[in-house]
Image (cartoon, rainbow, N blue to C red; front, side, top):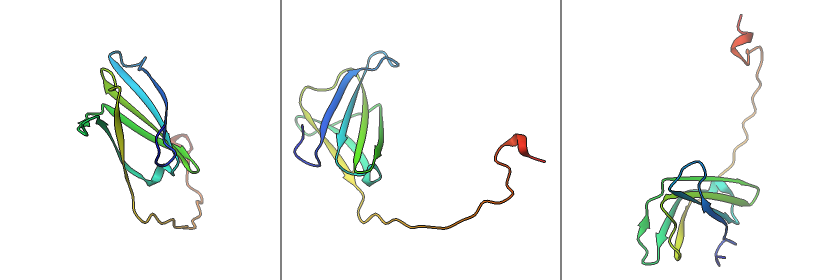
Amino acid sequence: KGTELRAGITEVKDDKWNPGFQKMEIEVGIKSESIKAVKLLDVSGKEIVLERSNIGGFFDKATITLSVKGVFPKTGGIKLEIHDNIKQFKTPFVIKDIPLSMAEKK
């Protein structure tokens, strides 16, 4: 468990779809759209190359999935870059008389 943002590792396992890779799932207590970038660091603070990362979430909890070739180090850290000053805008619109699939085209 981390001490910042209610962070915690929920799972580390071999990636069944990519032999020779491992996946790690982390949950943090912020909105997923607030996260700009994710970096995985070894114990010395050196960045570990990620093969893939994915960020998703719901309400005020984000789930981050990381993938590395080989195995994750036993100790290290995760660095999140967070967007500043996120704003939400509401833009009303109406969709009229537009085919929603190619089959509906006239």
